[in-house]
Length: 256
Figure 1 (cartoon, one colour):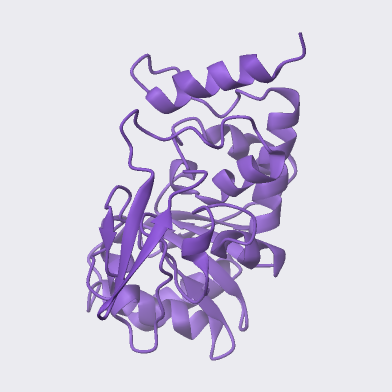
Figure 2: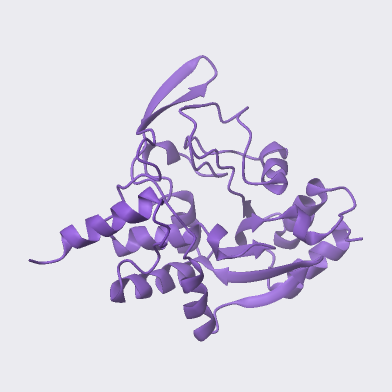
């Protein structure tokens, strides 16, 4: 059974070092039955980065229109909830795509320039896919922003909200939901580029098949793909509003 010590050792073996800033996308189930559960995984992550490091987890809510960062649960897994409740953790105010440790996130897009993921990547931060694939790699959406694809404004659903309210104590803060991130089912394309350029380190964390990479490498790989083929990261599901409308925006943006 994986323990805090064995998990920390696995994390160091895959390439996490003291002082690292690490974005963690995770599946607790993939690790195997862990002594102490999700809290043990968080403790091991903190052990690996040390007191000068940073762990950031996606505490997403996706479609809420009234958001209290102190009480609204994350829908992105048990490990993210353990991070949210960890002593000293700080959650950003973005109603749909909250993260830890960054102020002012509610004023910009969830994955826009200067969003938490963008800042972490620019600070030589890493991305750990702990038992999950690149469909969970939200930094690829930041790559779409850097590429300035013409579909950044397209919402996930036709009726997705465009405004929300952040509740902080007795205060209510109105927020515009700009540049919403969308479908990620075709994000495996980015893994091909990263592996071609030998930018991924593979390993196992407990029983979880995992990948570690630099955030800027992810962004650059996404930009390379999109420069050649602007619709490369869109899915082919005929019912996917985001990807259907994104292709319309791409066609409209082409020179006449």
